[in-house]
Image (cartoon, rainbow, N blue to C red; front, top):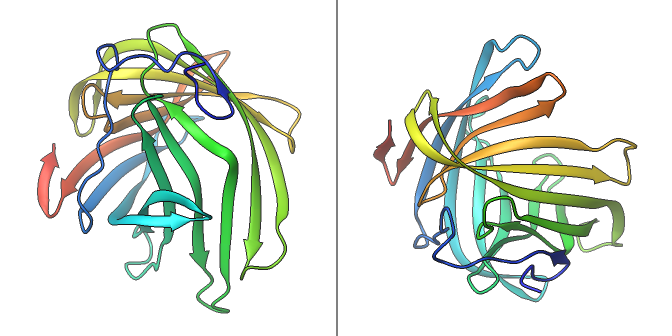
Length: 231
């Protein structure tokens, strides 16, 4: 089984992967602007400004991960952010999300959330191939009791490549569909996502409904260490 822990489906091969994720050096700063849309009307309604700082290797709940400080600067330029813990499995061709930590600025309480097993994104699928996984989310505050939050079922399909235009430019993109359901809801939902071929930059995401794809977010700009990459 090439799907890795908790998942089923062939992980694929380097030759067929639409994109290959890379771990940049600690201290790298990535700044992203995204356009949000009203899915009912298709009207743009706001720009989200995100800042990511790569923290380097960090042990999270006994596992080797890479820490990423994520800050939403859209409304608060002093947002303390939260840390996401990820790892890259180049053999199974999976991007693994282990969990995250955040601190309440009023109480200083630290909340830790995590997946068991890890939540995986299969970047090495071949066209039409799917990857299915079932994972559970847990939470703990200040090292206190571990609480079960939900169980998530997910099926991810690599649809193929498309040429798309977003505010940041025109790109050849890898398209994936993700159908998910969790133990707190009765219905499943499907979302489409597009990543640039080769380097996997997130370009667009959309809800998939009976009436078509309703765009939610598109990339406006990207800079790395202060150097504008896109547009």
